[in-house]
Image (cartoon, rainbow, N blue to C red; front, top):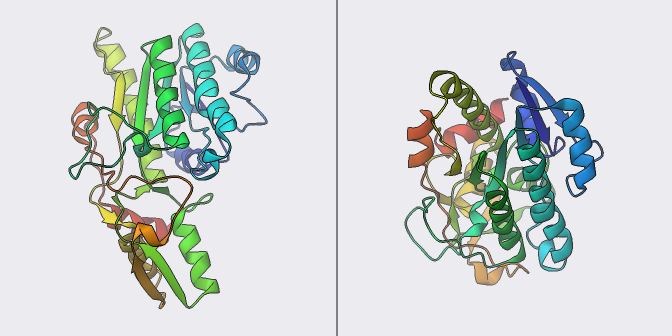
Length: 290
């Protein structure tokens, strides 16, 4: 079984490389943007012709939420056109596409977890391009899993956890917003989830070729917290003493509006694929021990 992973240098791409050794039955091929330019259809076709993957995990994305407000064309090129190109070649080569989307497709106006049937309403360029990417896949073919996730962090790449640890080494005091509520997601847990979906799909295809679980799913760790709570737990686990101050979003204006509440309901993905999902605090401790 051949699994092509785009965005190999990002934190999800690196997390997939980290766990790949545990799945000897899968031949992973990791492509960075220099190996595979998803914004170029001919580049996608050439790579797929050579590799002929059974599955493609699209971990490539434009994720600079604030910068997207001033770079809408670039965000659209990667998140919409690039995503559509992958869907087109996946259809052409009979590959299954696993695509990573985001809680930013929602406006955050609710106060109960969002499920997959909620009507999206992004408030910024990043969220809109990720939603348009979802729609681009759905317009091309049906053999896809779109996985919406939130607040991704890991020991790899750039993320909130690493930013907090860096700031703690530079400052005596840090202020973090406490009125945005969501769920931190360990990128290694997300990577494991994607591989389990692939393995489940392979098993189902053998036993019941007509069974179809394709569609949109939510995945994050369990529980919920504010960014302030997340930072507090990061410092606690790392035994860092620092003056951590909670502040409202209004005191920390950003170019892009963030959802005030973006907790995702994972009922569908747990029941479909038999997943057990770790609580975010437990997963954060696990990250620290890796």
